[in-house]
Image 1 (cartoon, rainbow over the protein chains, first blue to last red):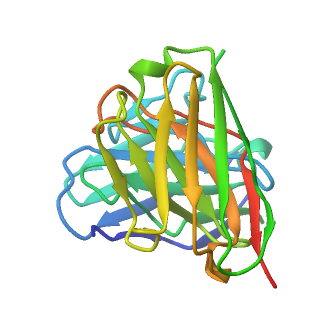
Image 2: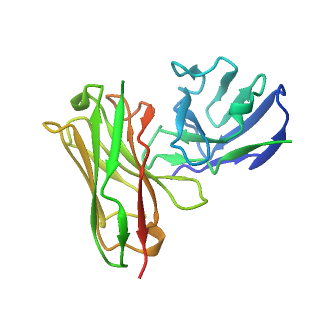
Image 3: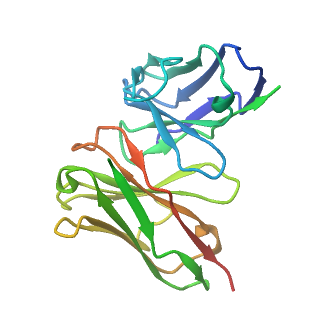
Length: 107
Length: 120
């Protein structure tokens, strides 16, 4: 199975900050990479698919980059509603696998 | 709008069985792949199973292989997960999730989940 490793596992930031998190795949996955946001007590929501395509309805302050084995999710100007956990997921091959998540807390 | 609503969760003893259902609306059900994903208390997301748009292809995580069965009824717009030989480590919220038409398309929408608790 392809292992997805996210870093950092958690970070503290302030409203208005620019935040970047990383996801690494144990083997090349092209651009078959999605990012999800999960707030406590809620289901995940798709933010980015195909590594860099913004999902319809997702705020434009979210952006994704990378291909192959290294990927990033950037939040350009952190808002209060962005404090949540973010997961990457590869859908290049089965079994589909998720990273362990990056929790974004208020500093 | 897209809606997925899971049901069938509950408390079950180790070794027991359940059938989870996911009622779908707001999109062309027969044209979409579907997944089950679970999340144990305080843990991350774990993919469980996949079914193709026509039900002809299934895929499973190793942790549930030979115990769980995913299926769909396109005439009822409903996805199912039969879970057997349950273990304590199967305790989780189980989410139904919608993909695209192809397996190589991202999960685009999730239901609110149904909770399964395995305990004696």
